[in-house]
Length: 316
Image (tube, rainbow, N blue to C red; front, side, top):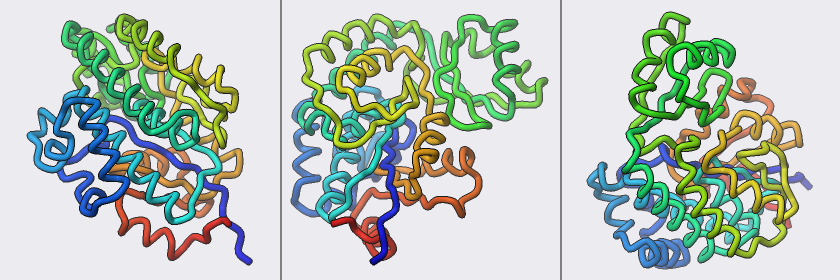
């Protein structure tokens, strides 16, 4: 009998979206369609229409995009479970952490959609009063970046430690605009990101404080498998610890590279990107370049699930 590989489910966050996402997932009536209908009711937005037809500037609104992406990821979780797959560990990139927690059984689908919708509204409301944004920095060391930021843009902070060659920074747009030339001089590249605010930056404290109250009032159950959290990059199992880390997430850096390395060290040999896009697969190849040591597949519809079923035994 062939044993199943230790599997980590990874959930994407903002930046993974594209027009047309969810089309195949919602093509037939069933639980994925019910989930997005509930997300539409909770958020108040026509998420299917915006996901499939746009316009892009409406889809990328934080209070639209977060519930839309989460609904797709949770729909994909249903497909995987229906086919007999279960995760041995989970992680989610920023927003994706909420779908990961739901997949691990920390809270249910309805609670997940409620949390994400409230999070997105708070972030959108605060960000529209801030002239802030984010940028990706490539091919410089953390030490080089720290020197550049200290000398040219002290209001900027690290938002995401994504991979060995990609760090995302966040802060006031005026400060971000000063980073390009010195980073280029240091041999790197600075790419402004099309986001609505300075995510994972201390300036989001007003939204974070309001969201902490929402989290406090939400019941967190013990996860069925370890959850590698953004703030700790460790496999967490204590629901109180997990709740505390969720409260810190909005203003803390996303330790994605360290999370993936910890999951790999814990024995994960198959990684599934559960949701739209290929962002996490791209990061994985840079974090663990030797692709002979693991497999990674994307799951966002029935077709991709069929490919997985033909090559992976299902645990009984």
